Image 1: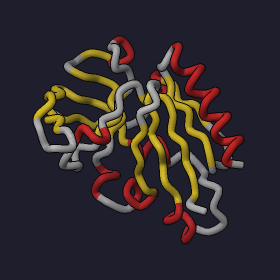
Image 2 (image 1 turned 180 degrees about the vertical axis):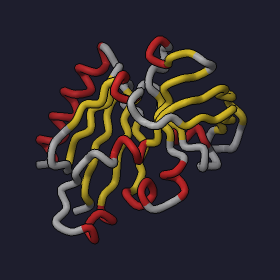
Image 3 (image 1 turned 90 degrees about the vertical axis):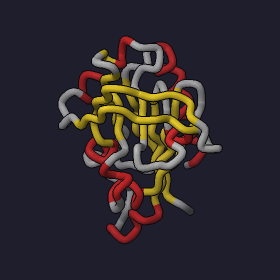
Amino acid sequence: MKILSLIILFLGLTLNAQASKSISVMGDVVKPLTISFNDLKSYQTHSLDSLVIYNHKMEYKSTLKKISGVLLKDVLAKIDFKADSPKLLSEFYLVCIADDGYKVVFSWNEIFNSRNGDQALIVTELNGSDVSQLKENIMLVTPTDKATGRRYVKNLSGILIQQVK
């Protein structure tokens, strides 16, 4: 099953690399889903004035300004995880993947049961511009992280949902 998930992930990322205007959600889900950039516009929008990006050493890297987007948890709320019981949801993790293969991980509890989930944002607008027109395309930021650059994903194209085995 893991091999099949990886093949699907690879195919999805390969297709998205050419036109990364969508996010494929796959893995241990009842039905895989592709969310287009236009689909993201139908969700409630959240905004941040700015977000300072720090690397793993807490060194300043850049500042993102005029950020708008949708909560990751709002997008994932439409996904049915392959879990026989709600108790099993604590065993799930999400791998958010960029076109270049960069990956960041969240636990199910982190998104749906903590403050991180109230802040993890799929960015649709930056500096007043539609991100689909920028080279970074769809982005993911987690303002509650200290080293904000660690989970700053540019060109977000896939979310692989897996259950710990």
